[in-house]
Length: 455
Image (tube, rainbow, N blue to C red; front, top):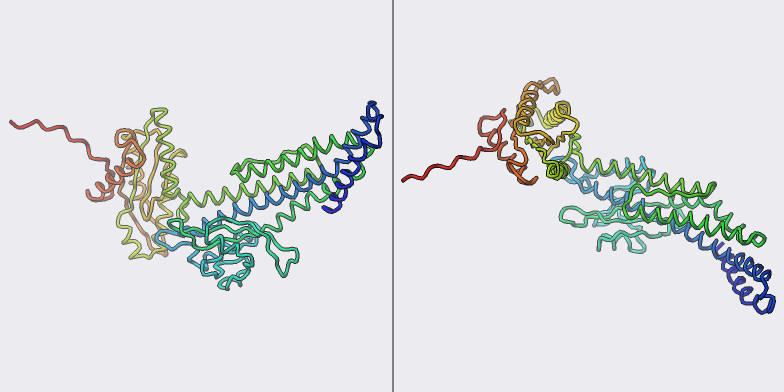
């Protein structure tokens, strides 16, 4: 098809250079000028069609690359996260990593593979490939990505696919930004789907370009102001999506195949938004209790303090720690301890308001953010939570487990101006409650009045 357009473009240039000499003086009259204009537009149609097809290919490839790279980066992020408190990272757990990759492949119908620095396959869409030596890196793109940390999209020849496949490789980084492997994701099916959606459009471009002499001006206007405009909208939407705008969608005026292409692109963007939202939710939630994790809690705390600074409304912070929790694990086992943590998390959600934020800060320590609550009212809330925990038996394996909690209560602005200060003072208040005998609520120490000087 591209060769056909090259021939058409060459002939167009030849005729264009011949017309002024052939027409000579008649070019001075309006009729011949219009004729020449119509012919010129008609001869330019193959070039416009070529540009349109190239833009269509480019936008389809770019859209597929965008989704593949974003999903691969999210997978790389999840693979380097701990699966629980004190547990190793997911990529260090072959069984868990393979289960995660299989789930992603099943939900998104993707050919996903994770490779370690030792060039062994850590997990694959085909579970039988796990542990094998990764040898499909003829161009060295995967090795280069693990070496310099730059994502790469590349075309790779494959014995099973003579036309080759489209792949993207992104680095997998652990603590201190150390590269520990790479995530490979094939996006050939999506690319072919986008191309297939526009296949009929490409045929229309070719036929219209070659048969458009009779309606040169009308077809030229239609192609230049209709098709190319819509394709540029698709390209612009893909660029916005690549820039991180998850709301970017393609709005085209055309129907039929071009509308199908826009619909396919928008469907891809919707799926990407859902996947991104799901992965974002996993990134901010504690996997055991479903509460916010520490990072998310600190962000919500800083946001609440920023809002409070504008409205001058109070913000209270509770820090809660289960008493003698180690004894629960030692006596009943860690599964029982996990059940206690899940039960306490559900209790917090049940007892708090919708606007309040509960989080697991680590181990058996929880945090509660109370926007708009003064210190005195926060103490009442803390006492209610303490009492509810003390009267909430946990049944596990036929055993009834009872726990108590110690709580520290602080309030903005009297006990701290920043989130770090409030967390520090709440931690001190919590340990005051621990030292005072546990199963109680404590605030920060009251400032001592100045002592008169002795004479």
